[in-house]
Length: 66
Image 1 (tube, rainbow, N blue to C red):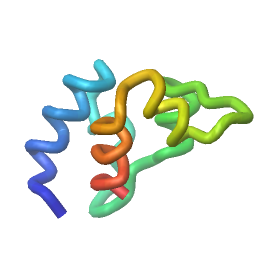
Image 2: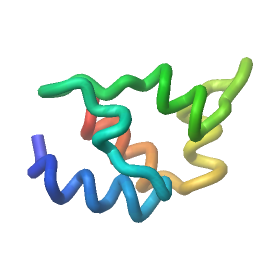
Image 3: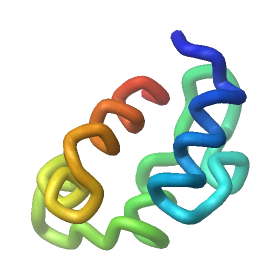
């Protein structure tokens, strides 16, 4: 896994929120809370919504955190 500090900076740059609000510990991103509060994918694939709103790099960032 990449350096979590670097990923946290990138996360805030991309999504405009602090990673620490959604980080539960090593390899534990609270993806449900993040989706509910930031992404709002509803019935759609979260991955598709992230790609459309933020680009493919944002999808890769989230995958790096999982």
